[in-house]
Length: 300
Image 1: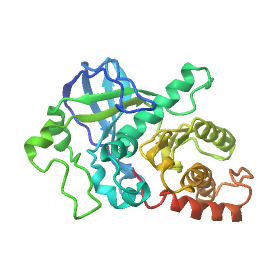
Image 2 (image 1 turned 90 degrees about the horizontal axis):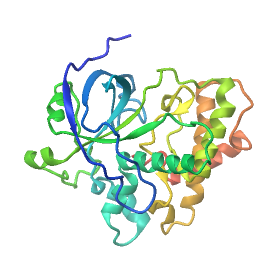
Image 3 (image 1 turned 60 degrees about the horizontal axis):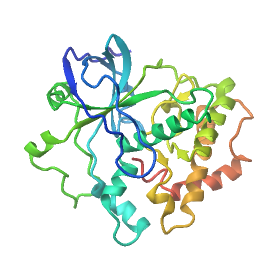
Image 4 (image 1 turned 90 degrees about the vertical axis):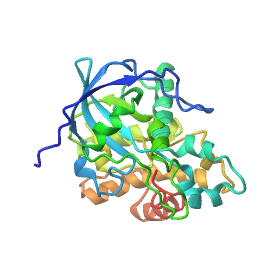
């Protein structure tokens, strides 16, 4: 196994206690140790670069804060105009791109999903942890940019449309944009996905769907210790795409996680009778519906 890169630097965070995102719906609280020094230890996601769904929206590090080990996901910047070619036809007419950003920016997507999970826990609807816990969001001081860039980390948004200008083309403007991150409990590198754990994993996915959280990235690399670890591609209701002009969109989206679960079983070659959908032939039909909902063509 290749030796992981180590970042021997410390820095201090900047405080911002506001819950995010600033729009109707679930929100995530700030990480309590906003101003504590961060010790960067190693990259945790290098092996996922170049794989489908891996390393497209940010980077994950093992860090130490207040003598405690955490996983810190640092997000790339996001410009909703980069994907207007996708959401423009779905939403029809003029629609505020800021709302699209609050619902589809991977950083805000994780904030909304974990915010909804926290709401359910506070109401007693979840009796145990069904995902890798999130401890809150954090805004990093801009001097982190130099530290990260020295390690080959590029935080600029990936423009999918050649006709769109970067959100902040001037270097001075880019420096003013806060570097956004989310702090999670540090899990092992074992996915925990195996035939004996599939029933529990499926129950947890269905619980999330019942909370109107659709992960949209069900694959073995998105599990640690048998729990989902990343929600950067997720949609959490209320969501602009779920209430669009396309009446089939909500139905197709709600089927998507179940289709992907069965796809994962098939891809990994597990010998099991556990299935989320009635039959494999039916699953293939649902998969085509999921593609229409953007599971394959639009992964934010």
